[in-house]
Length: 77
Image (spheres, rainbow, N blue to C red):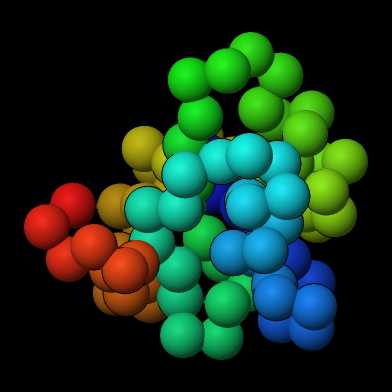
């Protein structure tokens, strides 16, 4: 899922994904957009509950945002 945060304060989109028990795939430099995934049901609800401003399907969002995203900790992904 593509996770959008209003600001990078308090960890931004990456922290929102972590609070929702998601696996971080990528984030932009400003940490206001993150790509995260989870196999558990209810992930979108958990993202909103953790503070996401907007949650979108990452397939289309990643294609549009790819110039703005940097690989997360594991560059092999």
